Length: 566
Image (cartoon, rainbow, N blue to C red; front, side, top):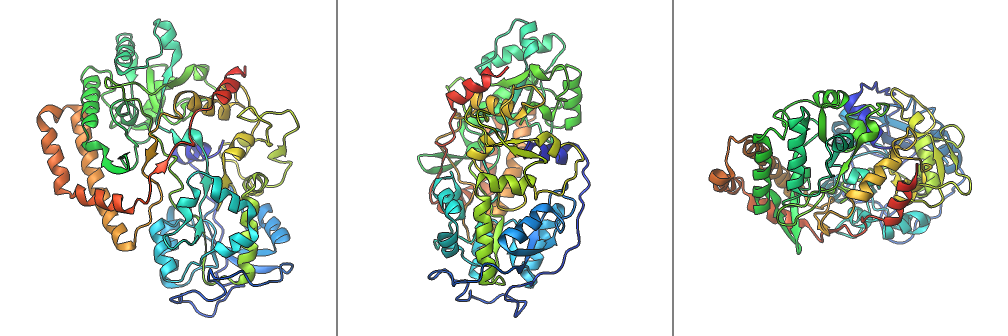
């Protein structure tokens, strides 16, 4: 399983990252000096078409790379050899561990000792503005126009991609790791042990009142009704979305193009009152805001938990457990005012991964763009992730169906590839500018019955499509926002202070240490002191347009197909 498996390994298992020392940069590019110039050369400008180059000879190129912990050695990796043989790029890797990648990237850029290419860097839109103005990273438009038909098509059709990569000057300076992960986009789900509903003759709750009744029955029968943790199972967003939109990230609520801060709205106040009511009655676990996730897992394993907020049930329960099949999602609840949202994080990409520096030659850039264009095909992403056909994947035979019920593209042994502690040296495993769009996502595995060992992807898509997709607002705040460095620093500082203040007060309201009836105005006054008005103005001014979520709706045919798998 993609992304989720990496999350589980990172969050709940101890992985050993094998990092490889690599050669320094400046191989094969224009390495006449260590410091960047104030502007790009004619070779790297966006004017005209690329110069003709000999595309048959192998050229050296240096990559900044942050490999996944499962990759044994990028230098001897199969896909590295494939890149050299097919795209004539002899790559040397400037490797950074994920824990130190941001620091290493920043130091290299500030010192001038950076590679030809940041293959798996991490550039915010503000970074893009900064380094493009300095001439360190170069525009790619003319190369994309000339050599990348697949990428060009994706830019025009993939939701959010064009807006994220197009700088205010109209140029494209980099590309993201594009991952259409529907079950990730609605990560704040609530999972319920359906066997308890059956045992106590209860219906699946659909409103906040019905939910409270179910929790009360659970409590009366010795079950921890609704639990959570401070490190992964946040109990707040799922319930708050029955009162006002809680994105669980930027906390912005966009109404008719106007940016508002949801934690100051009347709906947030009502949501806090409801959460406090559950807490005071013992229906929200007294430790839900402070305990660690291990406690939640123990409750689930012992059959003592009723409802758990989580991205997926495998995060808190062994998928081989007999009770695993009983855990299903609770639909977004309808609140007393008819509000029924689900937190949505698909307003992505938020940052760029791939960027070419002014040290790269024309020969290198042409080959790089051709490589990226290959990756922007289903087979290209499949090969970069998993290596050659045969070991971890094969092409699907005719008649084999993917997750949407259409013809599958591949049969991927993702359980084998992502098994705990597994090491491989075939693919780069999502390192760099991947393009995991909805076509690839629905076609990279054979659809299998949910709740089976082979059916995890089916289960996640089914529960998301059936209950959550389409419950987000029509417009949300964009993930990628271009601000100059000074504005970005001011915005980041305001964001840190405002969110810290909001979370502290939210907890106090829920625990009953503060009262929404008596202390709400005091709470709002605190935001004024923290200059919330300036924070919202910066956010408003930086937003060229809201992110349109209309592409992310439930598909009845997909739900019907996945539900039919037994």
